[in-house]
Structure formats: structure tokens, C-alpha cells
Length: 281
Image (cartoon, rainbow, N blue to C red):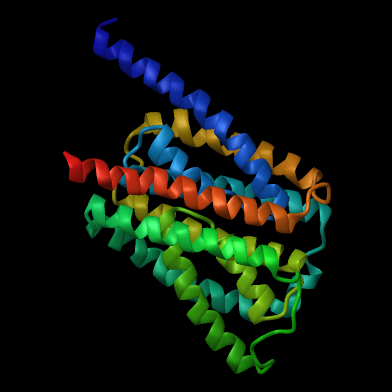
């Protein structure tokens, strides 16, 4: 085996191991607070595993798809979907808006330069980190901020969905960190129902994003499927299951505040540092 081949093989083995090792604790923490953890996987993909941000986003989206599908199966076996029925008009309107921007967001990401994409991702991750911190100080349920009229709910759902789909396609995330607070605070859903509804909204949104990225050749490199997506998907599911079993042991509000701080720090370390390095060169 030549030196370049040996180096490539060692890199693939390293990525396989680290993909699984990082995915388990990220999935565990996501399971504890009811999120998929994709926002924390992105800095790992673009930093620790050495992928460019253009490669990291679709890979993160593919892992998110695996995690969502597994979470729906797990949740369906432990919880009833009946509380979600009153929210179906909102869910369908969120999906309608999210699918549109998930499609065009993936196309837009392909037209941005690597530097522009990194800048947008840094801003979005910081906003999500701040949102997690703020959410940690808020009550678990408040009265719906929107009027109960169906026309209001559907219109607002489509508008919120447009923002959710854009965030999902640009970050490669399921969007739960945006969907759940939207359902709780705007539409008055309880946190458990919001978690289930979030998965139902995320599944078609992420699927559209994956299909669009695939059509643009994002998954041509099959080694990334075997040494990153597969182990990271399995690790995320295992971690999420463990996290779900440990819910209640740790205060969710404290975890959200802590993870919000960690997300901001990791986002600046990976994406802001990368920009500074290019400027210095």
C-alpha cells in the first residue's frame, strides 16, 4: 500500500471512530432536552472530522434524517400520537412552508461561496445558542401568543415554516430547536406534544433537503456514507435512547443554558477561527 493510500485509509478509520464517539454524547444530550443534536454535530463535522462546511451540511442533514426516523419509531412505541391531532392544521402549514424553503435553501447554499456559507452558519448557530439559553429561563408552557382562529394559525404556520426550512437546509439540522419553541409559545402546545409534532414537521423537511443535496452531487463520495453518516447515525440514535431514559434526572432548563453556551463557544472556535485563518494567510 502506497503512502497516500495508507494516509487516506487512516483518515477514514479515524473519521469512523470519531463519528461514533462524538455522536453518542451529542445524541444523549439531545435526548435529554428533546432535540436531535444536529446543531452540535455540525461543528464536529466541520472541525474535528475535517470536512469543509459545504460537505458538512448535507452530511449533517443525512444523519438528521436517520435520527428523526428512529425517534419517531421510538416515540410512537412509548407515547400516543392522539394529542397531536388538534395541532394537525398547524403541523401541515409548518410543513408547507418548510418544504418550500428546504428545497430552495439547499439550492441557495450551492451558490454561496464557502466563506459566505460559513458566515451565515456562524450567525445561525449563535442565534440558536442564544435561543437555548433564553428558553432555559422560560416556563415550560405559556398561553398561546397567537389568536386561536384557524386562519391565523395556518398563516402563521406557513410563515414560521418558511424560516424553519431555511435554517434546516443551511445548517443540515432537523429544526427542532426552532420548531419546539414555536409550537409551545406561538401555538400553546405542551412540551411533549411539541416534541412529537416537531418530528412530524422535520421528517418531510429534512427529506426534501437530502433529496435536493443528493441531486446536486453532495453524496457522490460513498466513503462518507460508510465512515461518517452510518456510525454517526447509529451513535446519535443510541445516545438519544439513553438520553430519553435519563430524562428527569437533570434539570432540562440548566442543560439548555449550558448547551447554549457550549454551542456558541464551539461555533466561534470552528467557523470564526476558520475565517480568521484565511484572512491571516
